[in-house]
Image 1 (spheres, rainbow, N blue to C red):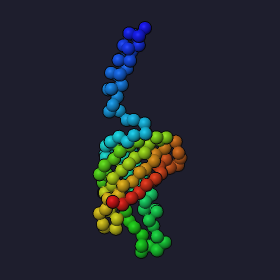
Image 2: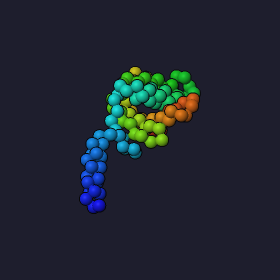
Image 3: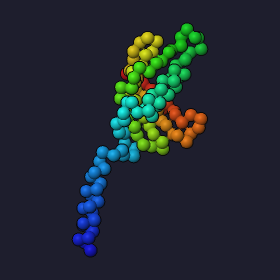
Length: 120
């Protein structure tokens, strides 16, 4: 009986060691900066942050444009978190921002939420 249990545990150990590179729930894993979901999350972050920074006086409005996604990570949660480093054009000035976008596909009409935005 003990020999069978040890064999089973050994097999499970070998099998689970091959899973070390798979995404882990609650942990961030690297994502491709060209992945369509990453790009969509980045575009949403730009739009959402543009809406936050708008001032009533049209002369003070910031215009944000996504230049490129520098780096991206994703985290499996109730949906997906995308942690992004973005190159952004703000009124002609190139800046870098860190953003976190939460995506829940079942939330309609907008499955995205910008949960963090910080200029570097």
